[in-house]
Length: 128
Image 1 (cartoon, rainbow, N blue to C red):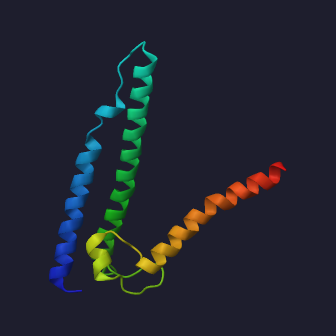
Image 2: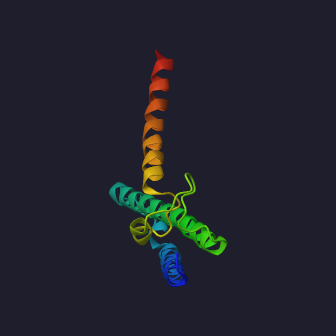
């Protein structure tokens, strides 16, 4: 990876990091007003849950961006953390905080999808 490419990735990651910090500062949806109307309370609760989910996603992505910046500093940016092959430039352009190549990421996603169903099956077997 050239110095210019490294510089561009660093700039992109720092910009994303600032965007995430700015989004996390907006916490209006976490506050609620006292109301006696059940529908209003339900709407406020739903809005609060949505905002909390957004904050959690932002925090997770912020961690990934910070890890990518550390990999840039260590000289391991663009190398898959699993198979140690180069991550495709196309993937890094789309997701500069990616820590795995597309093959390893797809395998991890499949494992993640399979895991909850295995837990459900095990739970069902235990209740029978």
